[in-house]
Image 1 (cartoon, helix red, strand yellow):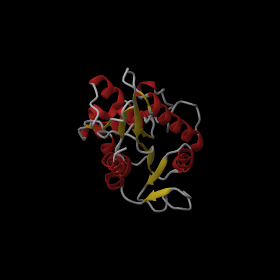
Image 2 (tube, rainbow, N blue to C red):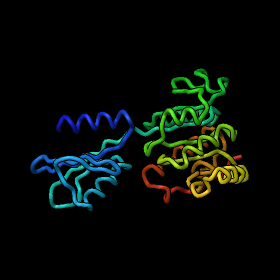
Image 3 (tube, rainbow, N blue to C red):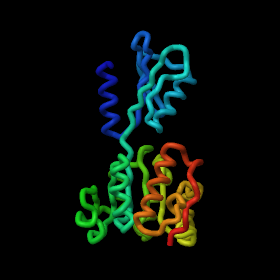
Image 4 (tube, rainbow, N blue to C red):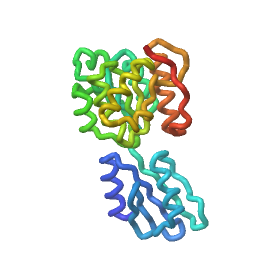
Length: 239
């Protein structure tokens, strides 16, 4: 691997930018691709470039479907879960998601809620959600769940997440609560994007306890991450 390519990969990892490196096994020629550009000594046909870019979201590394002996290695950010609202469900969800390999950050400006005593070992921030999300950035390896049940916290987070590339957006609330939420988001000019929100949140497992709801949320976002939005199941109504 040439130094310039290694430097680009290192910088991209710091910025949480996914890349795919395609190598021709016969001579070692390489092409480095992101979502929009390609660079290197190897020129890829459009079909192989599209196949390589499909790995930007999945993170898989594989041999491309062609006769040239092309191997694509994906360099993608580690999955991340941003939780808005340091509530009981978040207390159960945070360690579960961490065990599943997610970097978890809980966002809540209410110090009595977002405390180390309630969230031992979990990364916390007491910033307002819009401030925290602007600082942290929103990318295709990130999921966001809004659990506070408070529009002052949940709505600003959703307004930033909806036009972003995050792979999953979920919001706690009953269907009636969600309809009021949709009205506010439409008024903010985001009506065309509100279909991205999973609400009621989580796969319908029938559970009602905070830990049971947390299981359903984690199951749904994992399903969406690997299978896409079309595979997501219906969700139970949350009060």
